[in-house]
Image 1 (cartoon, rainbow, N blue to C red):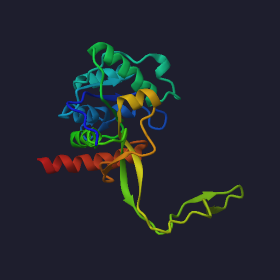
Image 2: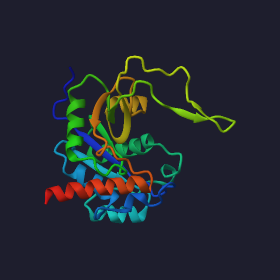
Image 3: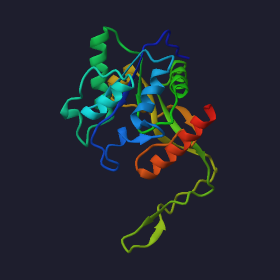
Image 4: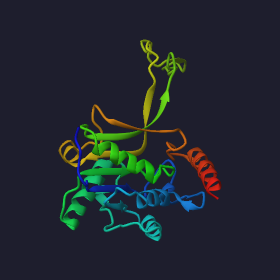
Length: 237
């Protein structure tokens, strides 16, 4: 078992301004706060994150995030704000900047997507703890388990007919399956820098229920997330 003693953990919140499917979604109001605020509040309340920052190319997002106490040491350069840029490149840029600024290397890197407003600080700390105590290089948040005797996947063929997606697809063992929920990725620094990947063939799972796995991609997701956040807030009162 690998144990990292007193690990240095860097969390990165990527918040580009150019969303196409749901424009300006990172700062859309949801249950009383702009969506970006929930990721800021969750990482701020983490007990295991050493440093964190928000990376954005957008002046309005930066202004909103700063009102919630986000650390934003730079405005993301234009070449890292295009439609085809990967979060890997954004995170590598943030990692290099922070290691120069702080004068030390990190052990673990956490990616926190702002489109997952129901992820909590407890999820972040659990992910770090799991990765610290593992020989594996990466962790991914997933939703599940899902279980179907025969997955019913369909496609529309060239004739406009609904047909089986794959005729050979059979789940004979009825084994449950899990799906990335895009909420959180954690990776050990050396693996990330060398492989330039958040994921590995074998990963540690952080299983989150369907509510906490809500990923806001379109307006219907926003409604679901707001409903659940309102429920959480009412239970706290």
